Length: 139
Image 1 (spheres, one colour):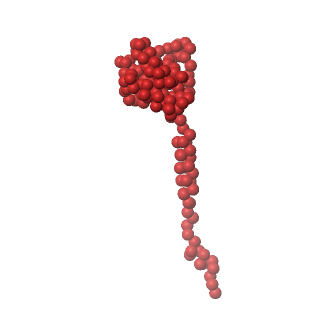
Image 2 (cartoon, one colour):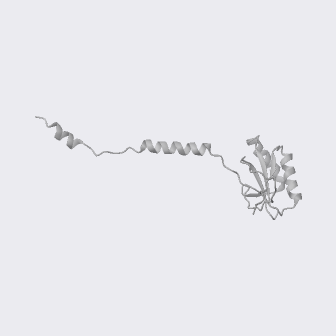
């Protein structure tokens, strides 16, 4: 006679958990978050912004031009010359036509340098330009 129960007990394998579907879901979620994330472009220099009573916080991403206290100009952490601002701005506007430009200048920078940077951005065709400021603290 055939012993079916004994045969089933001998052939039974331990239970296993298949991890492949879970790994697929993790990678799909990772790709989703990478694609939908917007990255903020920083100017690459730490500055003390001037205070303004009318300062408003904006969440728009755009090109950030930083001007240090020594008068050096930075874009994405790299120092550039005043003459190359126009080319950088044109390249940015070609990639994002509705993009905005924010000039993040130290409060000790001469006004003339800030105006030169502003002028180069306008010559490149930028329509939306702002100068970064901090809201005054109420202590």
